[in-house]
Image (tube, rainbow, N blue to C red; front, top):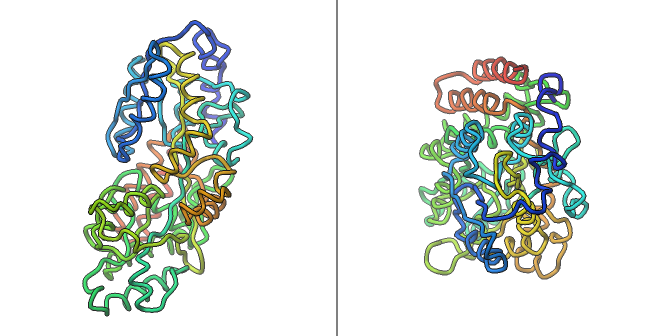
Length: 419
């Protein structure tokens, strides 16, 4: 999108054919995997499998904060100091352009990965100016988790529009078992999750945050309707006030505690909310549907995690082989089975055994097909800050929707134009 402003960051110095790239066969030894906090508790087990087979090239897990914004900050600090503390980076896909443009990650040999077996839009998240800088570890699309037991009580199907969702909530609240329940929540704290949820609301109203030419487009009627839905939700009680501080785990805990009728969440919630160890009050009592929208099914933001090699890492040949192992189809299948994480491999969505175990896979496949990426901007930190600042001001009531979107249009346009 911002080709003219980043050509200086598009050179070959990060390529796999450079003297520092991951192709040196003797560049082997211990490495690290830097990733956001492992809320699933499963990553170490996967690393143990690698470490058992590669005792001289062990991978050490480096857990960063749960917040995506804090993760990005630590990744950037590591890169700016040219530290070799992080070898393999597990990045939010939207950061790949920024990291590639700044030559903080190496180009990867695309032909050595089974990219043709993966969902094309997901593969594209790791691509920058026609070169592959990151490989999908998993992907993600937002889904609507809903209480089947309570909707059954009112004879309702999962809603496809925002209006239907509000109507269903009002009916459920009229039930003895639904008294006081929160209607809907997502990720509305002032962090990357707010960018995701705002972008989804705009897309679900028929708009876009940035158009195909890279121009900010939040000064539109569709963007206004999307943000207005969220603002009205807080005003009329559809969205509980405490959800203004929700990140992923806050909402998950609330849903599992039976405090929410509807919850916008990533697929990983499925396994945790179905736990039979007493940690979830809604195990076996919920289903999954596409996000609702203004006039019909909404559109999710595209999420996930992409694996890249730090420009400043040691033992890059080991790092490359580890990414091949960590991102392969067998591991993606395991991740789905253990954590319900969305796999990047197309065939897994049609696997009969997996579809039986995870009946939402067809819904997830549909959501991924229509998912929209967040703005692909080299100065993404400034872009997402512009979105978060204005969206938070509107949700808190400190700025009218029109003023918030006017400010967002101005600041987002400035972030896109940055040299």
